[in-house]
Image 1: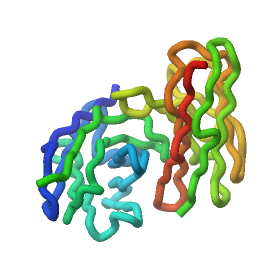
Image 2 (image 1 turned 90 degrees about the horizontal axis):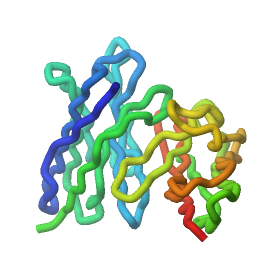
Image 3 (image 1 turned 30 degrees about the vertical axis):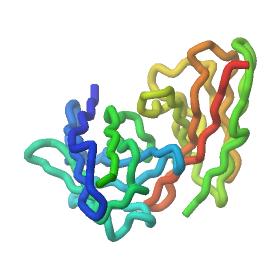
Image 4 (image 1 turned 45 degrees about the vertical axis):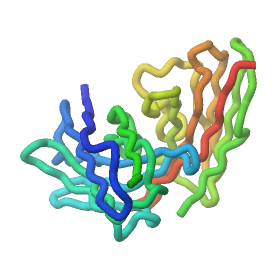
Amino acid sequence: QVQLQQSGPGLVKPSQTLSLACAISGDSVSSNSAAWNWIRQSPSRGLEWLGRTFYRSKWYNDYAVFVRGRITISPDTSKNQFSLQLNSVTPEDTAVYYCARDISARLEYWGQGTLVTVSS
Amino acid sequence: EIVLTQSPGTLSLSPGERATLSCRASQSVSSTYLAWYQQKPGQAPRLLIYSASSRATGIPDRFSGSGSGTDFTLTIGRLEPEDFAVYYCQQHVGSVSTFGQGTKLEIK
């Protein structure tokens, strides 16, 4: 059974970097069939896919256009986890952030969600 | 970027009735990469249907999906009290995923 456990701060100041981690059990971040995603949800914008990382003989990333340039999703094979970094945050980045595993783009396993508030 | 438009925004039905939810894409989507999710308050979304019509593990057979191209449908055959929730469609084309804005299924 795959489980995803999120960690990271719930409050970030404007212009700073949002950092979250997602620890994986029951699978490997280096899986050749899975991809590891970050998604966020806010009342004003609904569910927004942010991006993913995956390994297919080498590491790849896909990012949503609206966060490209501000986002980094990276694997940590030593800890079997992956992380999200979102730079230069504003209050509009306030949301519940989820990590999720996809196989063939279906998001079957999700983390518990982390409410991140951007405020001074 | 493909935009998914779900309708109706809110659907009011009674337990035992049949629910039909629509998801329309701004351009053609491969059925292989069209999924439906259910979300209840305070919970993460749960995968219901993938590849447009395949039920995920443990999903009751009253849930079914259909469609192709730009028009997809989620049908709930006979509503149970636990089915009242928000439903989202999601697609993945190229290297980008997007979600619809959701349909809220509420008890009439």
